[in-house]
Image (tube, rainbow, N blue to C red; front, top):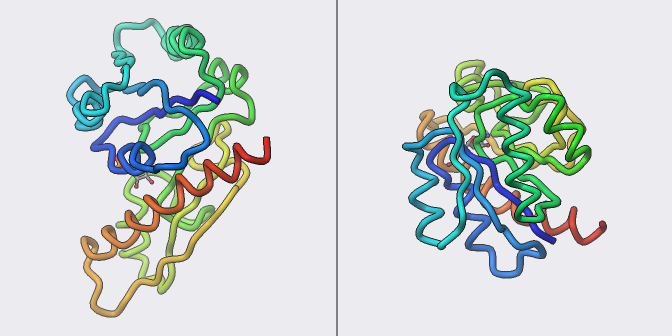
Length: 185
Ligand code: GRF
């Protein structure tokens, strides 16, 4: 089974997936919408092909998603894992990979969707937040939930210490859920 990771940022989740020894799929491509993203350097380290695109070079979302799909097909990709991909998928991509696009989000959805979920939870003063892995739909961090793991917000936490613990959970949970998902397919 071949899969692609879509990421826009530093790529710590990307790296965690790449470092997983018994991943049941082959990560065959990185898709990235930011030419200067840290994740691209990480992909190079693994010798992984990357498809870097600039959304501004296309007339609309359907056009760049079509270009992405062409590249995914070229690599025979059947699953897509979003890891800090900062774009909302449109109908073109969703229809093509229906039920095979998964995202990870650093909160217990449906609480704190959107950007800065860790900061949102921290500022809200909740005692428990966490991590969600879910199928995507056309909304922002909506779509059927696959797995969640709680993370307690401790008395002496700062946003930084909380972020570290949440990311550690993400890095364990995402590869595990990917394996569970693909093993039952
Ligand atoms: C992660 O917290 C992920 O849950 C969210 O974006 C962040 C990406 O971080 N969707 P990284 O680039 O994997 O370090």
